[in-house]
Image 1 (spheres, rainbow, N blue to C red):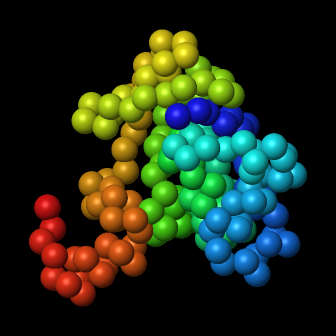
Image 2 (image 1 turned 180 degrees about the horizontal axis):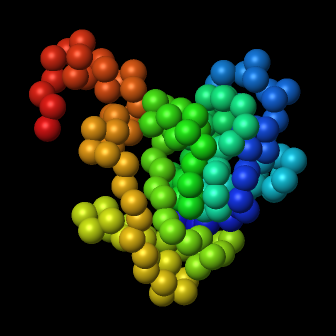
Length: 164
């Protein structure tokens, strides 16, 4: 899992330019991810890679397409110091794993990370740095684990699944 590093205040237009909002296929949207600030990413991102960003990631317009593009690219998780409220909600609704940490300065482009979800720790394999992450509430984690709000509702509300 390789890190793609971004600064503070990356908005949804930087994640996915608005000219692609007529596209609804996440794989096709992924071809344009971060094309104005990191154009090489769309061709180089691999399944399981991680985005690490500073404060207020996903600010700007309320666009589910930004989350769809990230998911379509194969990115496994977004780690940031904070998220905009609407991006946070879109990420949960669409099943994108997100984590908050206090300081992202210990992560660099290309670093390799490992997660221990039981004790909520991130280890930077490249540097040896270890930190705690703040998790989302348990009921929101279940939504993400199901792949988003619609699969969660289908499993637990429509089919009568048992909440754990």
